[in-house]
Image (cartoon, rainbow over all chains, first blue to last red; front, side, top):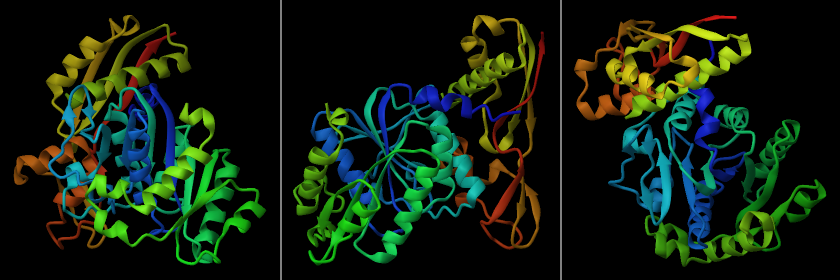
Length: 247
Length: 132
């Protein structure tokens, strides 16, 4: 017998126009920070936005946004709490400061459960903060949500880029669109992956230079949006995202 | 209530199976409820009765509960879930996402959180009986 939860996931996302998975091959490249800031930027532009932290074992968007004290409302499922006019969902609402050690099957079950019971309502964008690599969350996501697009984050490091090549190759194989590749935390302007990204016919979206002010802005949304990091991301959002996504 | 979201999924999946099997009528849907998720049977039953579409109005929904059983991956100990040992907040977290059990429960023998759920995790369809 099929899992009954699977049959409602599509219905739950019926009124979500765009689903963007912020992903990358390596940890520590800035996926959560970019996912959170991207969601804030789109909200500021007047779009209705949701942010869903899918990094169940190592969530961090709650610290970036300072969501302490927030809890979903129970109403024929669960309604995500709202922060800065943006709907926000994370397993952290239930695990708090405790550790959540999960194997693959349990990760898959948690993902299905949360997608099946969370009522996002009408959204222009649902931004997904992905765990690194091509593991259960990535595989399940593309199994259940056929309309997802990937925004891939890397650093200028060859080590990170090698994993991006594997991720993009996989996404091509399963025919999932890549919205763009952002090169994050650039320390030296002469060191860039731009040409290597372009040479592989992958959609280079732009580079964000390393901004030491970000660390001090964690947990303070206004301060975060005032950083050079956020300014650079805003430019990428407005110039690189396909026009139809922003109209 | 969370039970309503799960009731929706049961109905939606039942209709999908009925279409696939080309049933003209579904006479019975057998549902199993794992204890770990602590679903209120009465609320689930009520939600099913309220959400039922015309194709399922004469369908009997049978709900059977099943104890949640765990097996430790470290020491192979097996044991059953005991809700009574948890405080209400932890119990509620597991109700929403049963995988939170790995945060709030450890093996009674070796204290490891690395265990598998052998049975009784949540809601699933056991059998759908229909007529063609």
